[in-house]
Image 1 (cartoon, rainbow, N blue to C red):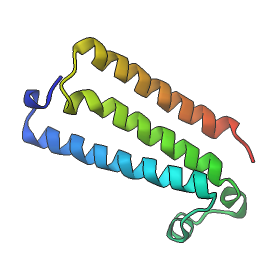
Image 2 (image 1 turned 90 degrees about the horizontal axis):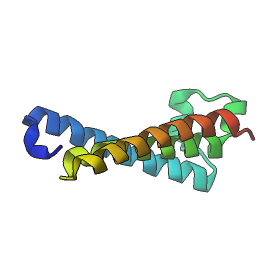
Image 3 (image 1 turned 135 degrees about the vertical axis):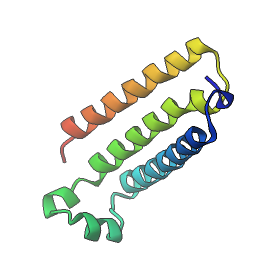
Image 4 (image 1 turned 90 degrees about the vertical axis):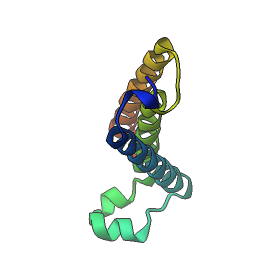
Length: 108
């Protein structure tokens, strides 16, 4: 699992997914910490009043989901042993399941 195993188009797609993951983590942490949605997000997503009252729930979900994506992509961009790559994949799956649980169980 290294950068050299794939063609340049796959590397570009993985780098794009890492950048998107970073953006999702930053946005999720910002929403969860400030407890406010960005105004553009409220307009574009057309959030209802009940949805707007849950910034920690949605921000935490996004932060965990983005972190799962970043952890999942790490073995493909950084040379690691195969066992470490499998462990990181398991951690990524655990983060995604935790994000789903966070979103489903956390109610404000």
